[in-house]
Amino acid sequence: MSVLSRPQGTPDRVWSLISGLKSAEFDLTPDDFLGLLNPGYNRAGVTEIAKTNLARDATGVANALGLVERENSLVCLRVADIETLDDMRDAVHRSLLTCQEGTPDAVILDAYSWLVAESHRRKELDWILATPADALVDMMSAGLIGEDEDGSRPMNTTKLPALRRWLEFIGLGVFLPIGKQTPFYPSAAKRISVELQREMNSVSNPMTGIEFLDLLSTLCPYLDQGILFRRACERIGYTANPRQLSAIATVSLREIEAQGLIEFNLVGDSSDAISFVHDPSFKTNSFNQVKLIGGKS
Image 1: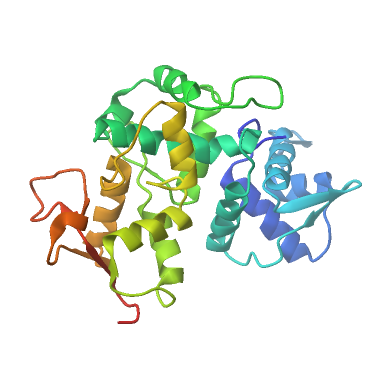
Image 2: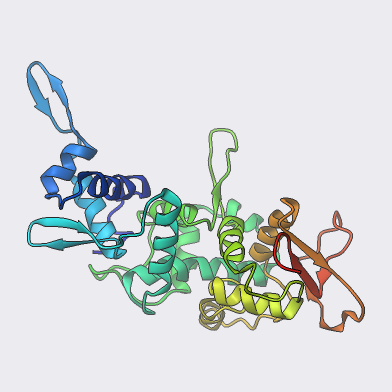
């Protein structure tokens, strides 16, 4: 059972399952969880349950992510160190990074890697907001491998909303409030910030631009020069300039820079500089030194 094949297994319902397991302090049956998540309502003296598939989808997704496991008819917590919602975000991110290439759940980060690769090739992001869902799915599927458990292609318009929800949950995008629409914008700023904060006191600071890009590609392998990014480039037949950042990496890092969490500098010889996607509103569009604000100096 893959994550995207259970659209009702949303992040908030998976969190409800984990919270219920922790607060109950014992294993839950699917009926127990259904009662917690969707207790129903009383109509004319009769208790009615609105959607009986909520618990099934949430437990199926949590199981696929390795957060819970089933033992006979019981559901038990598998990851004991999840205390907060942020802990769950990290656990989901770690789980997705361990997915083997071509497996159903690998499509989540593979699809994001495709977005990054395409944004590198196009050097901008407007196309993501302007492309209709069905056309975006067709383009994305051409750059993915594998198939879902039912034999269907790894991405379709039914799975796309779930993909966007889970990417947003782990910090790889935001939903923009534009009028009545809430289009998905693939900024990785939140996830990059979390990962860099963990590494802040274990890396040289400041570091060279090349050292920073090597670190970033290791922590977030779906971004520029990471292994998932390189695979995505191979699938679409594109050779990415290693000294040029993708549009997604550019907007993500610029956002973190604006928050005062990172500082990009161009010092001395610029022959080893890494280039952002050009933006005339910034004084410099390249860097060869990076300082993580708050780390050791």
